[in-house]
Image (tube, rainbow, N blue to C red):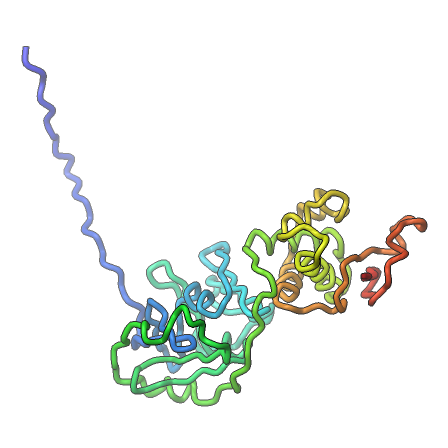
Length: 301
């Protein structure tokens, strides 16, 4: 007996046709950092230029961590830019920036206004009408591995009139701080947890100091290399594994960690820290030379 042949039974349902991605509203503009255009164009709305957040952060030496409800956090040049979508707004280091155009999402990609980010970093932004492009200049040298000649051509468009008004007055270009050691999002979170466990309730400079000690140890001879190796070295940080360590970090812990990773060291090179009121009086740590004290935490070398 021949095997039965399967028959397709119509269900009355038809697959919806694929909807092509829609470009952002407004006039398309190129976004370039130190002469290198981003692979995805930006847009201009009501005189303000918006750029894809992830690509802009990467081009400027930072990174983006996705947040709840489609928002994200940009860690860039020692600053934290929080993109909120419900309601839509941009926070710069915890303060809401009164931008003319709020962050938007198109095709599952977050676009952020260029002006407040450039202003916080202190970098130069210019509107180039001939290229219909927003040019960001950091003042840093261009690596030889990526010559400008290799940059793809940008389409020449008529500039939106309002864009020139928005970008006319910009701060003088200065070199933005770069990370003093390489780090990942996981490394940043790990340092933030140490700060939360060791310096919860302490002033901000104490929190930056705790992070700076970790950074200094990574860079100093005689200590493990790499952020996790320094933090998880035996008997080095009492907070590791404790409840506060597991609860952290909060926004201030993260900001302090970012500051230290980008070169902020209020301790002057400390390799140790401790709370003298919570340390055994005969401990070897009291033999170390004290550099500075913030709150209840003493920093030493």
